[in-house]
Image (cartoon, rainbow, N blue to C red; front, side, top):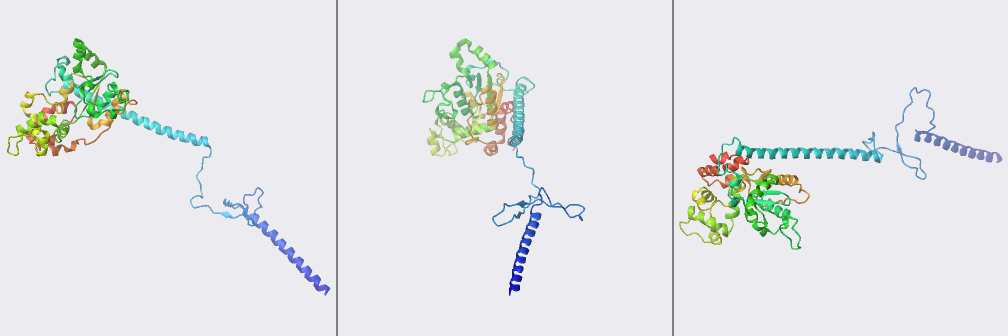
Length: 418
């Protein structure tokens, strides 16, 4: 019996010793596999001539009761891009990129200003060639001097002495908004708070065209007497002079739409009723409505073709000069007697206005009001002239040819020959 107990005890102790040896051996093998970058690596097998490199693997922290487990990398991250961790290096790189963008903006701005300068030079040179050079086109008043222009024909030249500006306004060429700007610059109108208006858009619409708000050359005689012409010449030499122009035929369409396609008592009585008496009478009656309201109610209105006939009729100017809304620009602004520094166009109104304010040094003081509301488009010409006989179209072009030539608008060949 004693021998049996001794045997079982020896067997039990041997089993425990074996288990301990297995645990120690397993822990040693796990350490070899899980820590390839140990600062004291295990020696490689002497039979291997070249050591095998084990790829780096990320590991998760030990969890209680668990050994370290290798975490595979996501696809695409086997070769990560180098990352900049130095904040000063990041800032330097950002400044470099921002500097390049700023240089590009400056370069583009300089190129734009150079192009704008060339465009203005071409417009001034064209007028000079037409008036003093090889221009063969003749028109009334081309060769007279400034002193030969009557005072009444200088009423479109608005003067702002505070900023040394002279603006020749042309109706139907953004003149309402430019008059707004001139009123604000001259501080000629006070707001309800007693201070001059600063925002052109805030000006009361019914006051914009009030002639008492604007100092024009035509008023110089009453103010300065015999010195008026001398003062005009001095200001013309030293002030910045500008005007804005528009395709002559499109301007005529705009004037007709504005004055005769909606009830306007003044224009109907003075011009519309005259057109109807001369060229209308479509209903077989000689009676013409006395008022615009009566005419519109009866559906009796002058047509655009009748308007063209009115402009071409010699009797029209025998009775009175053209109204400013359809008077030629060369008769309003006298470009052969006044050397304008800046010629803007309605077709490029926003850019030209910004350029002009920049030239005047006023870009930070005032913003030109933007307005495209119901603007007459050049593409409408063919539709508007469809009922006008080709012979009348050609005569109308001859009447406005100086404006086409002076300001560089192409001759509408297709409109004149079809």
